Length: 361
Ligand SMILES: *[C@@H]1O[C@H](CO)[C@@H](O)[C@H](O)[C@H]1NC(C)=O
Ligand SMILES: *[C@@H]1O[C@H](CO)[C@@H](O)[C@H](O)[C@H]1NC(C)=O
Image 1 (cartoon, rainbow, N blue to C red):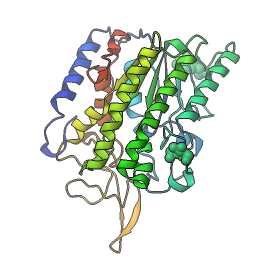
Image 2: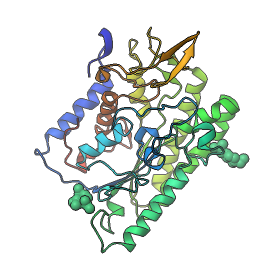
Image 3: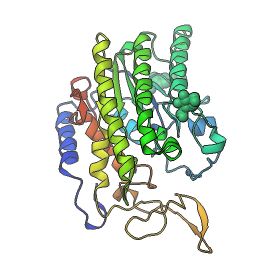
Image 4: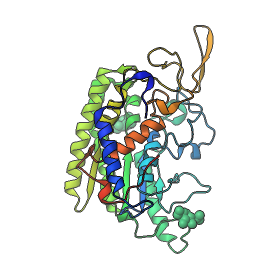
């Protein structure tokens, strides 16, 4: 990926991870598709969104969230690329009732999902009703239905798939903004252990239905935008990530035969966001960031008496940030590559040891 306007290329660590991936992949014969994981079950939020627009077609979400969806595949981004590298086709959203095929797993993620049960409605604050506990219930229901319908085949995985699946969790960013404003960052820090406990509990529940391999993304630098970082947010995010990492280690050691991997998305994203000249592709205002929190991507607002619209750039491949909140496709590829390259994972987990990785992109 070229960086915007003469800014330095992605920093060394990310480049190293991408190189590691290319080396890892070159060991696999072309088109080779062996993999220990035949399916992926993903829980998450807009970073791996699949279901929101299936459940609420053509609904615009209030409170500044994008009223137009970004280009197809953008939100599913890094999950999609990681899956592609494992030779797993696009995952159907669990909430998509028409045309779904769950042979290779299911995507339970919806835009604006939280780890904790929301105390508010989607129609009030835009928070998804499909929080992590609901997504877990859906996963359990999915297994029950697979066992019931096992003879029908067609668009469901085999009944013995649950131990040979990769369970990905990429959720927590919406637990931050929705609460930070209300309780302040100090108040929020007291709430962090509950979020982490909920994730650890979810992994134990998934283990109980057969899951053995879990890949959990940490919290990206949500307090940072291309225009800088908010210190109090950042502290809370870093503290959250430390707690999460510890909880995942404890969870792994308490579950015989389980691999619980912490994916340091935060480090990858921070590297990407530190480009001084990075602009938002779909934003408004020009200047150093082309980002104005009053007008999100696709929206039109009257500012200083003039109606202005935040429109998309023509070359998103040159940007890290799509809309000031979500990563671009190009950045998602770098994040996916960094995950596949193992150096951002704890414990070090080489997917290349489990699958003949295929090129992404
Ligand atoms: C919702 O309220 C309950 C009870 O007051 C609380 O335990 C829970 O943490 C709250 N959830 C969120 C997301 O604020
Ligand atoms: C679902 O996808 C699998 C694998 O891609 C394919 O073999 C199967 O025929 C599909 N099922 C239906 C009903 O299209």
